[in-house]
Image (cartoon, rainbow, N blue to C red):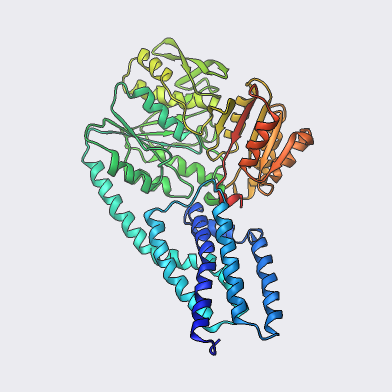
Length: 524
């Protein structure tokens, strides 16, 4: 390449930059969807099927150029084909409808700066020193590898920014001496429980909750810095974790006087490593409470029930199965319009009605009832508060879409929650359809859990639509093993195809459950 004319080198360099553009954007997008974690991103990257089509095209062009080079037509041919392919990839990318598009956060913008500089250097070196037809192959592959270097270079900056904002949030939090801080965690149910508590107590207490699924250190930091006011009386903080040590760190950061553990189960096994790690980490929500604090736990959950708490703080228990629960729900009734149940408070029985669906949501409501009672709210006001509970987005939320009845349970599902959702579906009118890509992030047990999920669909659903052949393969096998008719199972490539099928093959009398909504990293 040393004998290239300057204009040829510049043209090749520009064409390589254009070709790299889409691949850089895709690498950033997938790195974000894999939570900026090397291990998750690497697992995604080395699923070679993701590059199957691109590599076939690349090798075809590689062979074509190699043939043309023998006829002395070299650099110009490479430039022309590179530009054509770059235009094709940009056009193709523009047509993709991502479930979760790339969000240009401050972090991503900083990564873009470093990414751009590194790609300019790399593409210049390719154009200057590498054989022309090899530049094409490397220009496709390099963006996915350079993201590692981008992440390493920006890591000190990100850590410094996080530390600055977190310290500011801690100072703000420590100035509110009278603020009641409630930490909520669990393998599932924590977002619903957080919202339920707010709806029950907000008539009596000016309450702030972490919005949406803001349950990470930075999400909580942002909530404190942007939303917490001196007038707030209660702060309900959702605490998420998918690694050992994360609940411990959040407890030291937020320092709640009250901790709630809604459930424990096999979720995020891929990062936690074992169920024991999950149990121990989630229960730090109780272990790290002050001695004069309060813990509220769900003793229907076997992992919570069997855990030996090493803290002398007050503990209140809730449940619908364990009769020893301090707050026991009984006489449960369900319908498509919601749930009703009874609870004894101070020796008197009260009937509660809620729009929420499913047995697990009654347990979540019980956590709110227990806390409200601890706060001294009158039982009649607690009953009213439960009636005022609103549906939580994407968590067994009833929706009318184009006249069709949908149960939206699209937020990252789990082995227990998906069965609860199928139980709710089975109570609905008309034909019962489930749309799901299956379960993820369950480590070595993922295929087993998906297989059991498929088996549980028998007699709960009439028709199954699986999104994405790869991830749903074991759901398909489980459904067939349980006796589900093969003609009542459909595999589609994306949710859009699923909706098109629903609107053309079912009626408005039927009910459709949307169970889990995988990010693009697991479907493409």
